[in-house]
Image (cartoon, rainbow, N blue to C red):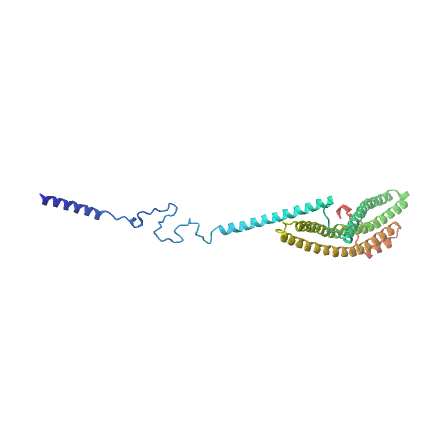
Length: 326
């Protein structure tokens, strides 16, 4: 009986052993370590050596194609813009405060009496030259219509001379006179338009360029005085030593810019005055000679005046442009 039990147990063991042999091995059992949980984000266990490519979600891993470098450049640009806006805001506040205090008489301003007098004289000169330019354009415009009327009148006299034999000589005489007046009028218009063009260049380009430099100089003067006042007020405060060095640096920078623009304005105004005298001497002589020769009927002197100044006149058949087209 015992032998039968041992045989059955042995047979049971043999069959179980055979069953275990027939069971296919688990290929993943080597990756399972008891007692260690795997990271749900990163598919590897802590006991397994990992490389750089094992988990791309780790923030400690940086690759050449990482967008962090682009983010850094964007942050730098943004901070630079913020710094520029901050500096501009501070400078604008100081300049506005300086202007208000100057108008209220609570702050002093840097004044160069001689240069200020020259600047005021230049602005007054531009205003007067603009008035001359406006009147010369009006004269040229009206005279252009006079010349066109004389041309039409001469054509009418010539046509009537063909149809009125009894008055043919008188009509032809007047037609010839109007044609000569038209020719001389075109010559005078050429001189007037040359005068207008030269004065316009002097007034609205040459002088305006110098005035633009003067405006930059005046803005630099306001900034210089604003930072000077700020430095003076900070120096008198017992607790102002913290930003005193920065205020001193700002004052020196604006003082250097102010002195530089001041020198440029002085030189420009000197050359402008010399150029203005030369140009106006030539143009006033042209205007006088052309007007005098035309209204005295001296055609030879009128033509000589235009040759003297190298002015080309359009032919009588071509329409002369009005002053608005110049």
